[in-house]
Length: 245
Image (cartoon, rainbow, N blue to C red; front, side):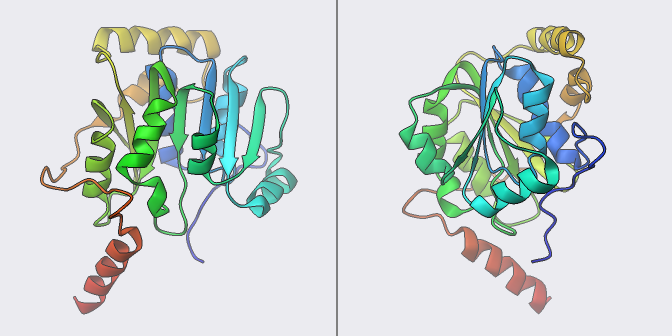
């Protein structure tokens, strides 16, 4: 009940006050094209709305499990369906399994309190995400690094994607993943600069690229699967250990 899920500036609809949400715009530099995007987890709608309003012509779909979140977002944050922006009220994995659409950017930022719902943090889920990306498309995931889940989460993402890049999030880490040829530095730098000049992003893509870093990751961590994804248990174990110490 005491987790901050979203921070909104009601006077500035394109502001991203939470630092990691700025880093989640990295896909705008990495994706080969900017035609179709989707996000699993609407929350206050900041990330979804930023992508929608910043790139004319980008078709954005936000998938949200809780209809009350959608209602509150429309009432208080002015995030509502309009041309180029759709909201699907459905479990994110179910929606991905039902849609036949593919995307240039697929963002995942779905949390239930302190943890990601287990079925959105397994190898099978990320393989589904990978299957819904267009050639040159990227997945962008918000991951909390301060728990026992971080290393297994990275191992799980790596089990479905050939390339994984990390961005600083000040309390969170943004993981960007993709398959296919590795995106070379010269192309990324040029693409970020060109798109920044074209769209005038509030958060400069060339500076977002500067947030890349290499966190310490346990190479021995095992991927989580649909048969074994003890998300809640790992969080509970950590809290128990904190109390004992």
